[in-house]
Image (cartoon, rainbow over the protein chains, first blue to last red):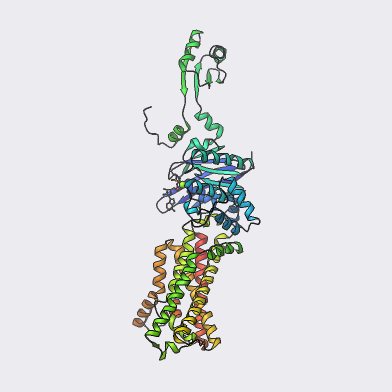
Length: 308
Length: 252
Ligand SMILES: Nc1ncnc2c1ncn2[C@@H]1O[C@H](COP(=O)(O)OP(=O)(O)OP(=O)(O)O)[C@@H](O)[C@H]1O
Ligand SMILES: [Mg+2]
């Protein structure tokens, strides 16, 4: 079991009339990509602001690198933040913004570091345009560069793909995976589970301020995978028939009487037909299919009746 | 601390508003002296045109509204809010002690601005007086220096008060309005009025803006202590409040 690099216990943030985050508990291990998913107003940004040291919890504790931060705020120093909008000075260019931050960090060799970062996020280093004239996507990219400025151990990205075009989204995804390979722990929030599922290794669902579920990538896949669940008397009798007659290769025997078939080109009735023809009675056959999005909506109790 | 200050200093130096404020102030000041030469006034029995630099500065600062205070208020609000509103602080605030240092650095920058402001005032006055009054007398240099140092500290204290207001209200317009109301010495006048009604207490003369606008005899030790005491107390008190506030603040 790898070490928890971030641990929050009963973390709560109360605004005057509103509990934005309520008794959140979770651990994040080094090297994980932790996906935080929740609807608008679920409390994602508030939670991340507390972990990033911008806001103080009303109650509960945050441990970073195995130390309670209430004892020493310096642990926040190792976090790179992009929370809500990137904090950029509108009358300065990208380079000037980064340069100011580099100065505040007391970095040596600023120019080289800044140009590397700009290149990494796909911005032109010679671009003199003021940030106020940047497109949403360019601001977002610059925000990621800013978050990486201090070479953090943990990168916190709050809805980083907001405003990016499909190409930009895929670039950011690549960047996240690339940074993660270097050992960086990444926390990323979104209201689109589908998008998170392409990068995250662990997921927390936040609903109305509460962490209602934490899944590993595998658990989530299991919950959302597309499969046909076949119940028969004896699975071992059914397998050869499915293999030979329907050319099914992708399956899993779950118990003596249950087989999950993952080949998506097969229809339920084909399975029923071959099994019955071979004298195997089928107790039930069920197509299990839910998209990540459906799953998320179900878990947050906001699934709307749909007619599809 | 040093790094945050360097960063703020960069922002300060590249700030066109700052140069604009200083320039407009200087232009108005010189124009004001021109007007005085057209419509001669006197104060305390001396014609303005015959005053030395110290007397002239005291007479300028004693007239409410004090333009210098207005400019200082505008700049203090502007320098803080232009960073706060963009969220730029998010980029460095998680560094060790950054909350405290960022406030201290802002306070130093305000000191720098006040210094530039007073320098501009002295230079504009000298230019205006030499052109329109043909008078460049400075008078007693010791007195002149005491006056400038005292006024520097007092104005710096005022800028820190305004900084506190901007930090706490988090609102550009509200803090500008409050800053200007303070600059107009409205609280000083109210306290003064209440005081004269109820007792022979004299708290109001120890208020910051009252101290700035009242003419002091700095050859008198009591007046020097009064000025220095008020300035130092206000600087320390409001710096402390500003730092405390920033340490506890929930940032967006
Ligand atoms: N400073 C604040 N003062 C009062 N209420 C706040 C404050 N910040 C957030 N809230 C409230 O807390 C709740 C959670 O807000 P938060 O911004 O954390 O949600 P979110 O999950 O990030 O939403 P989104 O997807 O829209 O970004 C909201 O109801 C919001 O109104
Ligand atoms: Mg948010």
